[in-house]
Amino acid sequence: MAGLSWTAVTLSLLLYVGNCSADFKGPSLSELYKLVDKIWENYSPSYKVDNKPHYPMFSVAVSIPYNNDNNNKYDVSGITDDADTVKATLLTCEVYKSEKMVAATLLKWPDVLKQCPKRLVQWDDFPNKNEYKPIPWDQVKGVPEGFSRTDHAEYRTLTDFSTLANIPNKNDFMLFYVLSSPCVSKCTSITHDKNILKMINDITKWKNYAVVFTNVFMAEGPQSDEKQRREALVRLGDYKGAHGKSIGLNNIFRCDKSCRRCSSEAIQVNPHCYKNPDKSDPSNNLPSTSFIENL
Image (tube, rainbow, N blue to C red; front, side, top):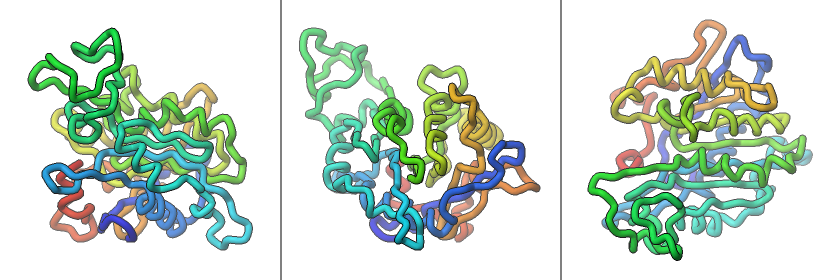
């Protein structure tokens, strides 16, 4: 792939047999692969930690124009957002917003001290935050040792999704990309106050849309449970939001060197979309070591 050597960006289609939209109506798998590759090449943010590249978790929602003169139908060159401006905004820990794109990295303490130390604190209830005036992250004092807090990238992107959702072009293709699959305990938890299940349904305002992730999100604790990760994908695809419409597992993708369907009529969810990859299997290659170790 072009850009950063994500030697295996994984993109696969999840088909949910019982969903009302049985067939994916967007671009072909090969076309979608090219679109995701171009989004990655143009907008993937990175910064250095101890002179080593660090690639933060990030998410991009982009409305890709339909091009009648282009055999590939959807043309990423129709997105006019400047790549350097988008990446620079993301690296300040701010959400990038335009009429065609919303993007964000995760906002995590203490990672902000490396990614955007001079930017103003964005959490009103952050420990010991100066209540009289905004202060930069690196001036915050008294945070308990071992304290951690995170707003996930896809949640932050969807929080500002209205800049796109109010002006969808019926012929555009909505690509919602997130570096790793939405997690079990927060993003796809029905009971968590920062889940994405309700908000992500706004992508159904587009006639054609897809949710795409690269890596299976792995973490300590319950998220290492394959059954829970599989169920999280089912919830993501099947949850009906305020519009009464689910996004459909048939509109969720993962990919590596080639595009694969994550489901078929025989199996509801392909294990490739939720299992811990076997790194000894070349077909399960993930991005380069320097990329993986920073996720």
